Length: 246
Image (cartoon, rainbow, N blue to C red; front, side, top):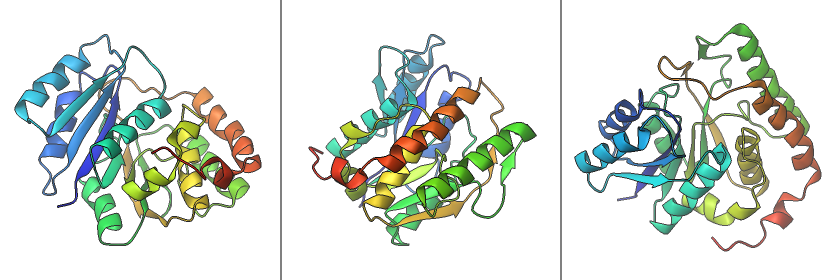
């Protein structure tokens, strides 16, 4: 059976850590979980370690020394997943803004629908965001529109953080050449997959703002994404990823 992994970066997520792991483990399709914890001072890692005991062999933890950026957390997780022979690797937030039940839909879009990359998209069928301030919705929505236009990439939700990757896509990339650490990382990964010729599809989801814990989002995140697009547009993606050690 194909192995599937969900990578969940965490920093100060003690309110959500146990519940999100339980929710993934309760799904009808089997997903392992890899938590990347950046030395959370609130004890998140200790909660995850209890879940490792509860779900032996199904929950894993990588502890890092401090906040090193969302992108580097996922790169660490992707490399670990490839080393452990996972075929489907999904990135997901810890705060239930992504519905764990949608993991099955993203997985099936790849395993049954022929996609190489399946994006949980807030914007492919309109604007499906709940409980965000209007200003934040508009900033996110138009940032994705801007990226789509500037990169000529047929993706509506370019900054989405709920994505299922097949192993061949990640192996084709030189993950050490991914440059961005914040939310521009999400754009760079999708654009790289698209430019390398992989099939990228969007699966409509409803994104719900977190109820517990503190958001890590701020305007600088979107600023990085907007200015990072120009670097991506001027770069030679195929040349950068022509050779890989992965």
